[in-house]
Amino acid sequence: MAGSTPASLIAEGAAPAGGPARSKMLSPWGEAWRRFRRHKLAVVGTVILGAIMLAVLVGPWLWQVPINDIDFDARLKSPMLGHPFGTDDLGQDLLARMLYGGRISLAVGFTAMCIGLVIGTVVGAIAGISRGSVDAALMWVTDLFLSLPQLPLLLLIIYLFRDALKAIVGVEAGIFIMIVAVIGGFRWMPVARLVRAQFLSIREKEYVEAARALGVTPLRLVARHILPNSLGPVIIAGTIDVAVAIIAESTLSFLGLGFPPDIPTWGRILYDAKDYLDVAPHWALFPGMAIFLTVLSINYIGDGLRDALDPRRVM
Amino acid sequence: MGKYLVRRLLIAIPSLVGISIILFTVLALAPGDPFEELATNPNVPPEVRQNLRQKFGLDDPVAVRYVRWAGSMAKGDWGFSFSSRVDVDKLILQRLPTTLAVIGLSQVLALLIAIPVGVVAATRPYSIFDQVANTFAFIGFSLPTFFTGLLFILFFSIYLDWLPFVYRADLSETGLRWWWAQFRQSIMPIAVLGLFQGASWTRYVRSAVLDVIRLDYITTARSKGLAERWVVIKHALRNALIPVVTLVALQMPAIFGGAIVTEQIFRVPGIGSLLIAAILANDTPVIMAVTFVFSCLVILFNLIADVLYGWLDPRISYR
Image 1 (cartoon, rainbow over the protein chains, first blue to last red):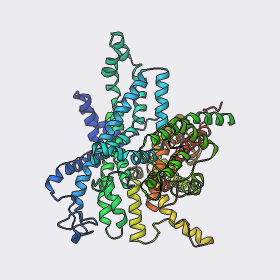
Image 2 (cartoon, rainbow over the protein chains, first blue to last red; image 1 turned 120 degrees about the vertical axis):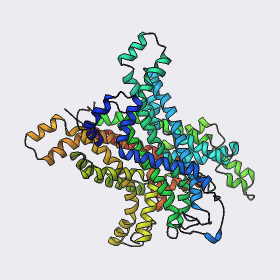
Image 3 (cartoon, helix red, strand yellow; image 1 turned 180 degrees about the vertical axis):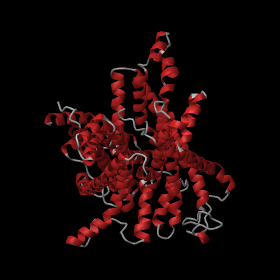
Image 4 (cartoon, chains in turn brown, red; image 1 turned 90 degrees about the vertical axis):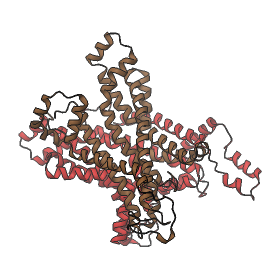
């Protein structure tokens, strides 16, 4: 058969073992979970991401060193007993700062992903269900946003509006809202295209036609029949978007235009550390590794979900 | 072909106008003021400041300012940099070649990695080589460029002391030695960008080649006695590159983002570092022009991708 090479290794290995497991009827989510578990690295990624999330959520209670405790006797110390991750140029404990900053970095990633997913799903759904000029106009806007140079625009918007928002809702919340909104606002286009493509194919399916023949209202048709069946690719895209958003936030902070120094996100710690690479490499290595491990885990989870949620793939 | 190009150029114009409107709206809504410095300086009387504002037309309505700005943009008059006291177009033209060289060479490096590795991985799916390549690809595009850059500096400049970590535009060497110094200081910025792109492209190339390698026409090519190498290069690869070109074009904005970060880390004097400096100095005309140049580059590269598309896939007609 043409193009019959399975796109994933586990698809091949799973073929003989898949027989007995399938005799039991599994719910769609149970089936997805069974497929997901076969992707070893995705499971490892889930464990690592879970550990990182647990650490940043519970860590600050267990490791009660203040993040802004300045101690000039302990400047730029390498990892040691009192400071497992070492200290920075003001003698502040890096472990405490990373645990605190990790919360912000991960929160930015997940919130920005949610914003991107919601906007993308709404735009894609409207474009996919309506024909003609509405569809064309929405897709033109989507393509326009896709060809915008995102990082320059992100920098521009954040620089221009930072002070105004700070004045309204305070420093921390202002910058958080701004960064999350801007990153999410530039990540919805792939989701919109995916959802639209799914809608275009699903709305021609027999069961949708049957539902329409039964007199289902368009809103219920979308919410009950089309949308749930088009969620697979959206979930995968959403997973990858968390990684993209974390990188975007770190990039902004690394360029000095993200969070201020008193909110030590991982990118911000890297920005502060980059001028001390020769004397205190640990300062840059720990936050860098944290970003890398988080992003790598999320990417592997996304890969595992791709195997799990594609029903056309025989496993 | 000529007609096709003209049509594609015409399609690009609405996008350019759309982008310029978005840019201008963002700038016009923002609270920043280029004459803030003069306002806080007691030696400058407010009338002078007011005259300057009038001279640069900062008090006119937004629509008027946009039309005037777009008109002068089209004429090639890009305004005057408030902070460096040079015409913006001169400033950008000075910096642009460096950026284009860094981006261009890093893309070449990325292709040199992605195409051979992706093809070999796809022709031997699930072999050891494929799995190693896949793992490295995952690591490669999970490492953000700013962290790879710092790791490179840490290892090659500080630990091994082989390469300089600050890019200098004014090298004192001449002749061959200039080229050598230029080469040494360019390796790291180009490698950081190229490896990141190469990693994600490897996966695209692999899955695209995997899609075509089992098709009937490949079997036909084999059965007429062609060497396996030519089957892969002339028959499989050429068709596999069609979807890859699309994905590469879609990634162009991300590549420019990476270029800004790289230029900032290694202090490469390109338009990316110019943008950051201008943002920090609140230098509106420069920010505007650089962002617009980035948008134009994205559209230009999309156009190139379209032309490549036609060359790779003769089924696309140019009419």
